[in-house]
Image (cartoon, rainbow, N blue to C red):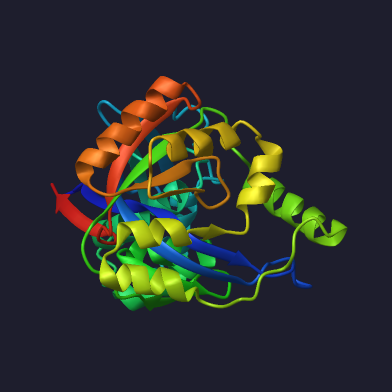
Length: 311
């Protein structure tokens, strides 16, 4: 009897994103500190017998997300995840995938990677592959640099392309305000601008070290210290490509955020609050500033990808 399986995976924010120079293979070595946030992508997987993979996308109730830019073909990471899993485990069946989006699209918060992670977990269960979490993590690394963290969740240090993960000690809960833009930023374009800035001398290459103040702030559960330590080498390139993000950062500062940073390759700006109530006040200020298209609040660290249920 056919059953539908659901899994959810979290958004992320980069507390540190240090980028090395482009290697001969085109990749940039990274040192990053991820924190998972309780904004979720939910993927439903329903097996079908004809070997086809289909994809549909909805938006979580009350969410301001525009899902019109999400591809519904083999370029979608969830589709790729299902296809890779089927080929790896010799699955002849197909699957109907339905994504319910709760993470901004093209916002630097790894929504697509969360889709891939949730699709791996949901399809592995729906097809009864018996895949271990370790096997799924190995597949995740083949799908994209952020996908292993989407499986892992919590707080972690990423090395290499960001997919070599080590859990990071963190105490307490951190409250975030995410200011999103309707227009996205292309990650390849942001990295190309980073390369241009490095070659022109506009930006120096950072040492690929784990930032000590960030790690100490996480262990202490100190939002003020963490906010003062946030670090992203792609923020300058993102601001160059979308100058209006400077206004968002200024508005977060005016709202007395502990710190604010462009998340990943942007264009989402993540502002850190002292408390849940402070996060609501920052969100209200950002909405009133009209510097962004939508504002959501979230807390971290959140868990990694979870199997929800099957029916």
